[in-house]
Image (cartoon, rainbow, N blue to C red; front, side, top):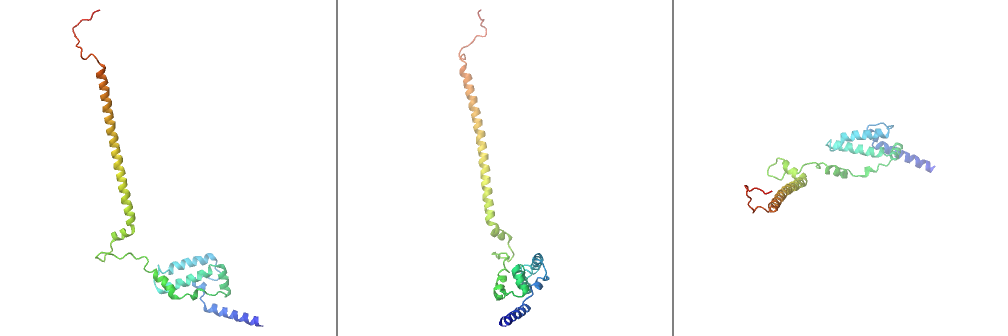
Length: 199
């Protein structure tokens, strides 16, 4: 008898709790017989519409929280079965809205460009480029300098090789000319062009 009363009270509490709780199927705009793929598709479609980065406003962020909470329960097969039976205890309701709002407020100013530091209020693209790509540009400039120095060194090396070849060729010609000059011994003798050779 006691067990029967206890079970009836638990059922009535869970029934009233599920009536008062949010209907996760309505949050995702699906029917209770939906498959896991349909749940996932509905979540992605609605989250793209109501995401705080795409749809600013308090209503959109509240709707996004409802959608996320519903998806967290319905995507898990075990939690979904508990929810369908009315035995699911909503653990996320204990989180204060202030903590959730802090999360969303911290991301509102996330993608804003840095404030200009110059005198004019006009946005300075050069300053933004330097702050975002300064290290990359410095590396590119340094790499270009190294390439130019390597090209200049290669050009100097080629010119030095050409000079050495010319000097070597001139030296070989001088050596050959010297050999030809010193091989002929009769330069000092005067020959008589009219002399008759004896036979």
